[in-house]
Length: 230
Image (tube, rainbow, N blue to C red):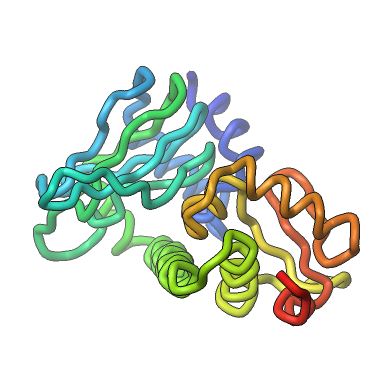
């Protein structure tokens, strides 16, 4: 993919990491990236290995996971096109990846070497601001996950995840609070299946408690979820 083609593709994806940067700056950052293809089930980053590269999904998808000492594989987060992972490569000191990341679907990614991206972070401080915002979203998702796991039923866990995300990373719009979140991420956070998430969201949508569209959930009044007999 040529740089102009890549620039058009990235403009459609609107990656949070490149938000509010000038087109000329984005072009320079993109031109420094390698374009690599990864097959399904490929492990791209390994937990505990040196964080030497930063990745952005252009097509396909990936997900991170954490391996416990007992060998249990815990799913952490999903990365659709436009999202980055391997953020520990942005840290000033030499660091290790906290989690592993594997490819779910045949994927194309942009890959930056740590040293080159560190140069961009110094030159364009907005990149660091965006990275911190992304990290804050991850933290809010982890908090929502922990709170949800303290509840008992699937309904309670999903309701609690949505309410906590609304207060942490929700964006206030005309009809309420909007969350940029997918069923897969909600399922991971609430420790339930994507099918259960879809069923409960559809049920709540029929009663007007939520409104669902592709990759988004609108909560007209988050408190209604807690007031229901969930």
